[in-house]
Amino acid sequence: MKTQRFALVVTVIALCAACTSRTPVKSIENLKKAIKGETWVYSKYTMYSKVAQDEGYPNIAKAFSAVAAAELVHCKNHNATLVKLGEKEIAVTPTEEAKSGTTAENLKAAIEGELFEDIVMYAEFIATAQVEKSPDAIQTFTMASDAEKVHVKLFSSILENLTANGNDSKVASTWYNCPECGKVYGSIENMQSCGKTPSSSFEQF
Ligand SMILES: [Fe+2]
Ligand SMILES: [Fe+2]
Image (cartoon, helix red, strand yellow):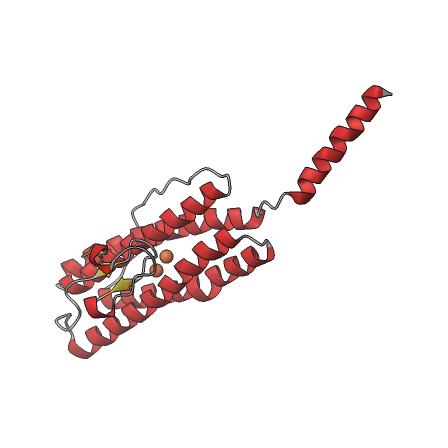
């Protein structure tokens, strides 16, 4: 009888723990997917940067390098969130991205990819995190999504510039990446710090 009571108490405690536990299971999966995706985008932009350099567009090459670094900021923030949620960090292992075209084609591909991340992928991840009531996941996904919006504008204006001039002489020659959120700026005047990092500490390319 005592054994049965003990087993019952243990079962009730386990069930209560399960009820009150708010592990955001899907958001944890989404954080892992986002880290893999961002790592892939980092590799892609690193290759696009090399292509731009080879085609004689050094300013565009720097812009791609700055945004590549921004995607690593997103990996870092997502990993920190995983750890907060009791998970292990995911290894960020860049790979060689085989597919690339001309710089103009690469800019178009970059715009499409950034739009997908912002409008489809992160929108879905944020909605899921809201359902799972995970403020940490909402915060890191929103921060990345906001930065992707900036990346879309940046690549769109570079593409316009390249199309109009046939070269990158009117593209900014120095690019700045916010190490906290991954927003990238081509001019010091427009830089906005999203947190505690002063704009003077932005990564420069
Ligand atoms: Fe990103
Ligand atoms: Fe991006």
